[in-house]
Image: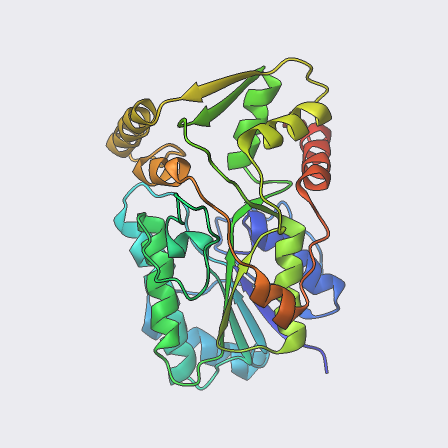
Length: 336
């Protein structure tokens, strides 16, 4: 029987790739998007579109009942809707936690709970790792997120765990990169201009996951039918910022790139100032207080054993291959 899959946040970077894979598998694919959301990467005529009122639970319940009556219940929900930067810091909690709470309660109260509710969470929900011995962040560590974003993701996880028998699955990726992504893209633009900015003077260990590998892990969870589990996700390797720079520079045929190391105190001042000014004009900014806390973290290594053993997850992309494919896309599309 063909699975019916809802992907919220389908108009975003990761969401578009989730939709593509769902279609490739032949699933009846529903893209949750707002009327104002760009559909530039959602042009396949097989996509069904739906706009759900996550901020208003009673309205959302009516929409779910109408969906079941007219089209049937969703077998799989991949809740990819969320924010990573906000004009108002309170929106992290409102959207990343509040919308999840409303959605889960509406599903329960309308008896439309799917077979799996896959939440796109984040390694950031666990907070800073061990910055002395650099041991990997593990699922049984006590979470202590130090960003508004991380706290909102953890809050959502804790709420879903509190629901008896609710079929949640948590995906907690590290830094996700690939075509259409914009934060690592800014780093690539800087390298193209001949400069590579890194922060702090203590050793920093980085981890990455290519967007297609993240999507692969999500659908492996669908294949396995796992429930009430959570998974840290990375490509399994550990990197430094200089390694990222070398891979990007090679793909851009950039022979000379000047490494610029920014002291943490200066980064903090810049992030706080830019975030404050953005708030004054009602805009969100890549540089802000949350971003400072993320960038100063020295250890992003995580234990992916559960994903390997329970899902059979083996990444297809190491950093060199992923960067090559991403840079090729940015160049082809005129971004670089």
